[in-house]
Amino acid sequence: MKIMTFAKRVRQRRKKLRLSQIELAKMAKVSPTWITKIEGGSIPSIPIVLNIAKA
Image (cartoon, rainbow, N blue to C red; front, side, top):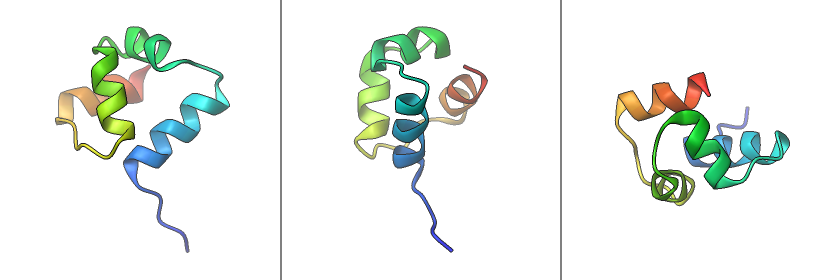
């Protein structure tokens, strides 16, 4: 079973939906910098994770 990191999952889903990092950030109500950091491996707070999940 392959376990995917949160960073890889966010990037994969964003690309599948054909969204830019800026578009995802707007939908999730977070700064584009946060999307870049998350896709780079930074661990976001729970509220940010929830915003991305709802986007």
